[in-house]
Length: 324
Ligand SMILES: [Zn+2]
Image (cartoon, rainbow, N blue to C red; front, side, top):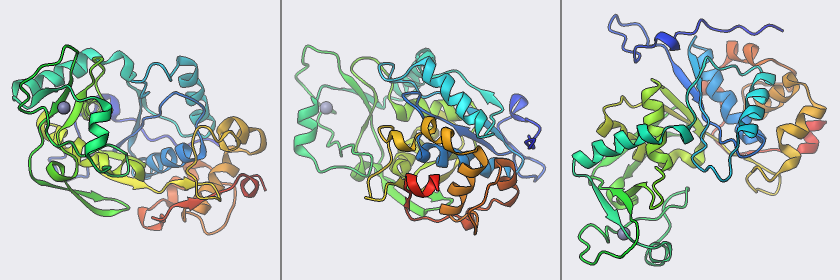
């Protein structure tokens, strides 16, 4: 079945400023980490991201999140592109992978430096973990500001932290409703560049989404607690806040999160047994988008997509059920 590709506005994208009252063109993104084959949870988040923008005639940006060059490879990146193509989840433009953008990230790091918001942090991992309770779902820790006024300077390279204001941030999530966080009490000053010189995910994502004119960020709910940090950086860098939609996680029948280790549910295995339409139909049925489990293409799903139909709760899946 031919896919209905929207005319791509992204190439001449003007930042979505609709001064004539028209809805700005939605721009979404796929941001996979090329460290292995996509599992069903990755496919699910990518599917919803695609459906949300394509159902409104928008455009998709693809970028490889390969900051961790030890774990990622060009081969996996190529397989990811092939898997998205097989699913008919097409993208309109691919931007440079994160591993090639450190000079750009450095420019934004300098902006923070010029605003006097950065300071070096010499805390070791064990120091950080011993004094604090765990932060939100992403496992980072509330940093107490130890190095803000540090007098002794150890003889090693520091990480760099950005100072955060004592202020509430509210995410109006398309699926999860309102999520509120005060960065000062719920997170603390956070690292934007590691001691080895690599810029962290929060900074890279904010810069990449901002420069690509992304207007909506759809991803797994495990990243919901990242949104306030990114909103803070967006404000400092002068980017508009995108809309956020954090989708449920897919769980194995025993309640464990699907991961790239679950080879039974990765696309390499699933493609041997299922057509893309069968796979998308099963996913759409389990998340509430379809009342019946039937084969359906991505383009057909886009015609009926709405955020109201999507379940908020985690979704349990098992391979046997899926493979019927
Ligand atoms: Zn420190």
